[in-house]
Length: 373
Ligand SMILES: NCc1cc(CSc2ccccc2)c2nc(N)[nH]c(=O)c2c1
Image 1: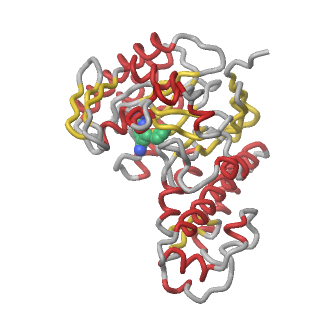
Image 2 (image 1 turned 45 degrees about the vertical axis):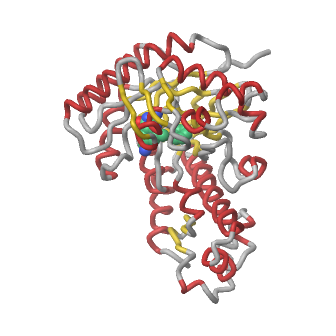
């Protein structure tokens, strides 16, 4: 029996929810943090390790994979799951955000966006239809609509133009995607920091009856309070029985605050990118292992962590690896960060299920503020 895509709410605590997204390739426990696997790899991690630390889904990137090695090539090799040895759910972004942030000589029209590859200068086009086609070729389980994300601050009319274009592109993506069993197309709410635009975007997308709704265009330069205010504006207009995904967010504090306001899914390069640079996230808050104060410290990062990278290696050793720019340092600290993010999400899921989210959030934040025990 083929499982279709379904979302089940298992518990609520205020606006916060815990649940499960059930798909043919597996179950995504929410609230969920989704490690970013841009070029068909979660940098520095074996896929088995990513699964073992609790990630149910990873992210792939249409922009990067269409440029290298190519969507048709990955399809010819059996699709992205087989290519990267990740048999569990994969969510792919539509590519528009990365085009605007990475490529050169880009031209955006009603049809789509043309651009030059940041890798070899070759010219490419992404339309709503081509983005859906590429994500289908990759075999993506959750497909994101093509959208236009504006950075903040920006003029209201700029945000309005991008929001309305994104709505027209959502319609075209829905037509191109069709209704395949077991796979989902998510819309992306845009509208900058303008409440009325955010509400119009959410209401229009909900009328399209999509399987899930992302909140885009946040964590693009605005302060955290503006981001949280936009979540509060949008949330009441999103259906309770569909997942909500806040794109490209964020720090552990962002996750706690956004979960408390009703967000179910997150992705962010922060834990992997910061780990590669020696910056780690722990239940005592942030640490920079480049700092000389760790040079003679024989203690592991956190003896109580279930992650071997956090409980079995001396800070002095990790400091040495970071200073020497050793590959193993990047790998171990990426592992530390992803393990902590998953530990935090598991804690949030349990706290919501037991109706104690407020206490969990307060205790977690207090531990970050206290720092090292
Ligand atoms: N920083 C915010 C952010 C991040 C991403 C990228 S999320 C991502 C990255 C890699 C792989 C999968 C998803 C976005 N993607 C889209 N389509 N629209 C946005 O408004 C947006 C905003």
